[in-house]
Image (tube, rainbow over all chains, first blue to last red; front, top):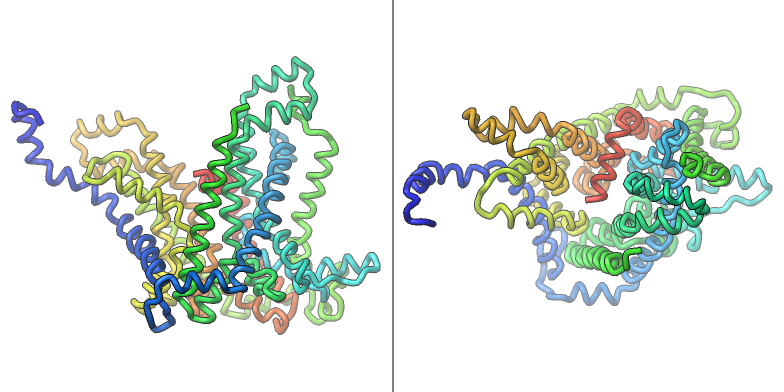
Length: 302
Length: 275
């Protein structure tokens, strides 16, 4: 600070203590909540993951034993596999269908507005309502699918108790529930594509597929990457649908990692073990986001 | 130009077919909810022919529990929405406009908070509220949601976009920091408040895992958890029609709010995902 700046200094010394810290008062309420409800629980979870703990507290310090146990626990490994399988079933479908809907419905007509509203409506329902609806569609004993099957003289299929079909059924339910989000993200991106590109294409008499692949898709490729990342992170967190529709069965075929954490924590009260599994999921989500970001940022501009 | 952007007819047909598929499960549940339970037990295909009845809805009205859950959901969702708007607006103004020690670092730390998934903190949160013996309370259902960094992020961005000249003019008039915030800047942020408020309300209304483990007493269930509890006894449920009437009862409030605030909701959800 300049020595000759005496007046400014005296003014600062009068108002500075209050002025310097008053700003903190505005952010203090949130920072307290942030520390108490996000940072502290994160630390508690990390610490618990190195202990053997139950409902009544820490029983023993076990270092990394929980993590070692996780990676030799066939149920956990199956849960990790199931989670990746579920992501593979849902993320490409959500991305492609969402993009297709956005391409078709990206216009100002009244009918497009109605259809956009229809495709987004299920997004606002809670997971418990969504699973209730779909169980009533899928149950072999009088569900809509069974009624339709009977109409065609077929035997009803027990989707949710079939080890091969249960996960696709949960994936279908999830796609039905979540298709609105990718659609609106793609719609927002399509609005940003410069119109003069299309006008130039029209002058050239470019075909529809050519416009799609040479103009539209390159123009929104960042959004495509973004949607894939968001959906991977969202679908990694599969919980309610599996818990409510199949309970993880049959034979663990639909148990995802989050359901594993929930059951280890609140059914078996192995809180340390559950906390370790939660850290693994946290790492999986972080790696997925970083890997996708890396891949999408490496692509050469078209 | 317009002809070029009009989608091919085959694509339109496919999209309309998909839209029908979106609606069919909802309509199925809707008609089942108007059917007599014993008729459904014999054959659910009877749903397509009369007679229809309001008995299932009368039964819901008669049963107090669903109303308790509905009230809990309303209280929790409104409280969380109000809380998030207040702390996020204050913090957003602080981070965007004021100078204080550690401002930049604190904001970066909060941004990192965006990357923390619920699963990584839920066990710790449960431990904290257990230690305080505060489960099965509105406080426990509301407070964790107030730590959501998204609101602070959104409001900070919004305050930053407001020209500083507005503050400076008010300061020359001798207005205090809080007065500038409260009287001059806050009214300018109403669009952002609407977006954040609606997003938070839906988040709170549809939250499942946290109320599931914190509100274990049936009197403290939110509607979302209550509907899950009735599903667990799916086989022994009071009857398909009754179950379906509950689904309609639980789903309808969100669908109605959605139809009214559609524009804001779509913007809020897209904004929250795109941050």
